[in-house]
Amino acid sequence: MEIATLKVAAKSNPSTVAGAIANNIRDARMVEIIAMGPESVNNTVKAIAIARGFLKEDLVDITCKPEFIHLEIDGEKKSAIKFLLATEKI
Image (cartoon, rainbow, N blue to C red; front, side, top):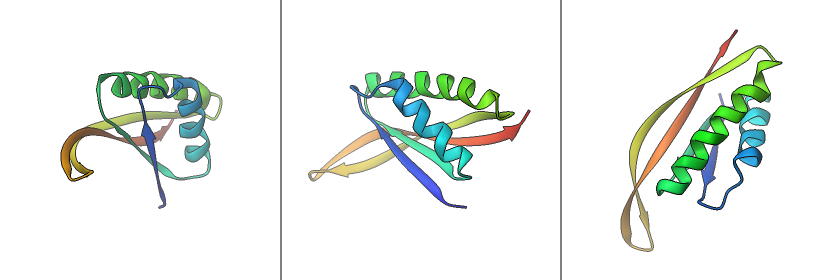
C-alpha cells in the first residue's frame, strides 16, 4: 500500500490538512504525518479530529499511532513526532 507523508507546520491550517488526510485515505493510501514543535503537533491533532468528521460519511474512522523520530536538518539533529494513521470501517 502506498504511503502519503504529510508535513505539518506551525502555520498549517488544520482544516486543509484534514482534507489532505481524508482525500489520501479515500484514495486507499496510508497516511503518516510529521510534526516538529508544539504548534505543529497541535495542528496535527486538530487535523486528525476534523478528518474523522470528514470520513464519517464514508463509514471510515481513523486512529493514530504517534512515535518520536529523529531527523537531520541542515546538519542538526532534531526530534519530531510521526503520526501513523490507521483506518477501520464503522
